[in-house]
Length: 460
Image (cartoon, rainbow, N blue to C red; front, side, top):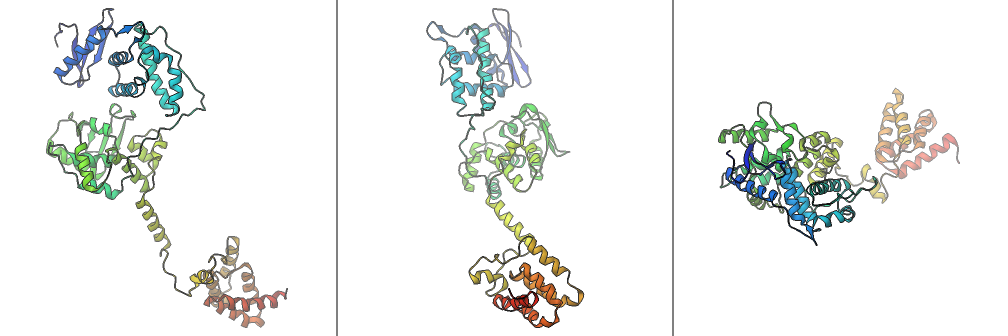
């Protein structure tokens, strides 16, 4: 572009226009306008140029105004636009409501640290202070601050306070996700591919900001993968993620309908909020937000048994402790757990017939497990029954079944079995014990078992 009379020029880098000029001191500046439209870029360039040549208002009593200093500092930064947006959020949410001037901010940074540690983790505060001291250093270079204040520190044991964001509602069940997608039209009246956007958001679990910046050159339909570039990912986690069948279906349909160029955006940074809320109302889902599809996908994958590292990679979490937060209680997961338990047991809880062996505990009004052999007792009895000689399999086998099912078995019963098989003289008592055990008659069993014990070992 030709040089503008005001003393600045525009240069297009990628999709954005940058303004270039020299300050009276001879310093060369090249700053982003944040605009891709030439007309809007010229207006932004003129504003940036004027702001850099016009110093902030300074009075003997107040010093440099913080809001004007922040605006000029942000305009001077040549970094990723999302980082600039983060710094802007720090300023508007935390700095400007607290201080009016730069000097007040420099004097109150220690109190700021103490207050913020009560609300956020120390790692988050470190990022805020990094941005704030970047502002202080810039102000010092411009002569607005005499000295840069000492950066406050804290002990390694100080962790701060985890920020508890308000919950946006329960985790969507798979049936709710399906109802939401079914209630969403393929395209809105303005032609936006709403259903494709929401389906792809759920299937991939990607952040909305990543979906906004995703272009067709990032899509590899041949290998069924999506390339996530560092610059379009919040965590700067570049990776190639596999695509599900449903995700591929919506991409193929969009590609066939739109015939896009490789550099075209797949969905674009457009507002789908109206379509999302309308579909949520029809599906009966309150307080719907696009991020809930991402949270639901992570939770559903973990609930289906997917590995934690795999889900972390898909969602773009560098720390798996972040992914672990997606493991949340779901009614569907509870039902699946019960069904799986029933399947493994082969019969579930089943029904207990009155008077049956399994109902003895209830009939007696006591814990049905009180008389069951536990631990080594069960092992000893099982070993005895397994070692039955062939000629006694008939009686011994039935006796083993009875003891195992009726909860009457005890350690002494195993000894009774072994000794009784060796004594023909007490075979009648032995037979009665077997019959009582098979019938589940505890009183009858004890009536004949005690004489067996006295006969074999003598009365006590």
